[in-house]
Amino acid sequence: MVAQIYWLKRCQILRPGHRADGAIARYPDQAGVMPYFSNFAALAMLEEPSCFPLVERYLDWYLRHLEKNGTIRDYSYDSDLNFKTAKPDSEDAYAGTFLSLAFNYCKKAGQTGWVKANLPDLKRVARTIINLMDRDGLTFALAGYRVKYLMDNCEAYRGLADFAELLESLGDRDASYFKSMAEAVANGIERSLWNRLNSCYHPSKTGWIRPGVNLKKFYPDAACQIFPVIYGLIEPGQARGSNLYQLFNSYQPNWLTIKPPDYPWMILGLYACLHGDFGKAYEKVRYAREAYIDTNSGNWFCAEAAFFIITCASLLQNRDKWLFVQ
Image 1 (tube, helix red, strand yellow):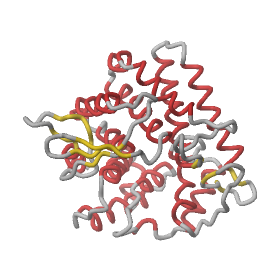
Image 2: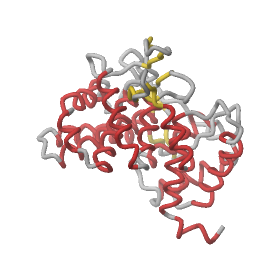
Image 3: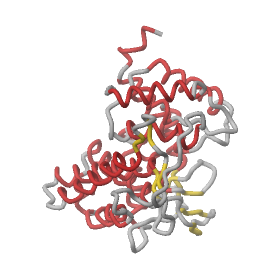
């Protein structure tokens, strides 16, 4: 875990003179920045208090690079920090995960001063999600790409809910508004994406069309089922959450030993922890170390390292529940 935190620190781009610019790249030796993945990297860095200043620099970098409408593009830097930009993979998920990062930074570092100083920009990011909402409460991935994904909507919900809680703690009068918008997204997920017949979620919705679900297909059909639990829309211990976990394990029994050239999907380790399945979470961590970290796999990048760290942190916090029963 400590080594991976150091690895993430090396992903933060340095200016000449070795001061962190703030941007967090996908790899230590490259300069491609996808803010969606960087948000997870910074979230994991909060597990180490000495990284709080680095996380704040990243938060500052994100806000400095907002477009006028509150979205952010992907960035690619050269050795002199000249950059090119590219269209983001999504707008709703980028914004949602950033707001959750800001909430967790304030919660763990206690930096309410930073939040208060940046509230106008943070609200601009939150309104990005709201501007992408359709009449059914779901968010489009991009303003120009009218598909509503379960994964993105779970992240958008969590971001708005976290931001509303943050505003409430500050006594900001807009807290209730953003909370109502989070609830609208949650209601949209329940009404439009939950498949009662098959007791699982549709991965997306385009217009009136919701594709069928084949849980033998890992992505997106099976993988998206974990997101409502990860982002707090349903409780892992309740009937729906437990049933989805059982279904996932039944249809995807090899998730513990995913190996290159596929990505490891370390978020599944966290998913197992949330269900109290710490033995499988440990096996996921152990196998990832052997197959990806020790081999310097190119499929190991900042977001995977982030969920490796977060899973390890959960295992350490719950070690009395599993360590001596292995």
